[in-house]
Length: 364
Ligand SMILES: *Cc1c(COP(=O)(O)O)cnc(C)c1O
Image (cartoon, rainbow, N blue to C red; front, side, top):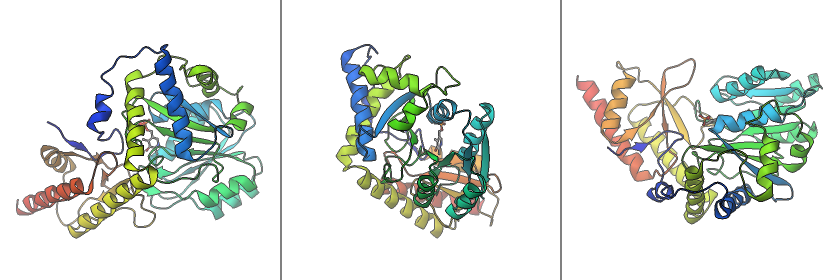
């Protein structure tokens, strides 16, 4: 049975994106390598940066592989990374620092709060060895959207590297990557660009990339090595996910057709507002009250009656929707994503299904 994925990636893709995968490509083929190069350029265009200042590197694997390629091959032995954490994805970066034995510190706030520039400034002035800040933009754990501007300004003032996991936000919200002076921005094929899973991409400031080419602690995820090969003619170092690349190429065209990032952002925002408003009318409270992002929402389990997530999930699935379990450490939540090939009429339909469920659950 066909259903809509209301999950933050993999998500519901268009028929034409799926259709684009019906071709077997050779990785050495000139046309295929040309597609890789076009994708790299297109991602720079979307970020609003020049190819003099930035380059895009595509990396096999899921989004975390892209984050790990940055943490594992761009951080030097003298670096000290400050990781800002307000959810599981921030914590995953800490896990990478730990595993690679990097010098790091953690600045953690509650999952419904955002990292504050004023706190970070104190940490930076208190410890002059900190040379990099790593943080998540849209914390998919809760759906909170972290603010980047003031923290970006600090990284500039203190000349520290700025690494941003923009996995679930890039392509779905306007971002001025150059003005934010982001050195490494990571995202993946299966989120707001609306492709299928299989690779991640890193927007890299060329200057930093060149200075950091000798720091790799990994072969497969060596970002600089991948760059050197890809920069020549679009060849990936090792086997690339050819079908995924074709789907992504198509997804980029469809992003253009929709009108670009701003138009997509408006659609996501409309979906999200509609979802939260209608769920509110049914009595479902969101976990995030301030700084809610437009991509995914965590809803608290209802307290007025017993609530069984599995039962709820099955009811929704039978009616054509798949949602996500919660990921907040302290409270029981479920999550509903509103990105992908999802429109307000889908949200309307979903809410009717949930309303229906609430009535059934109420009676029984
Ligand atoms: C999806 C996501 C990732 C990557 O997760 P994968 O399962 O490795 O693709 C990393 N960070 C954030 C914020 C995400 O939303």
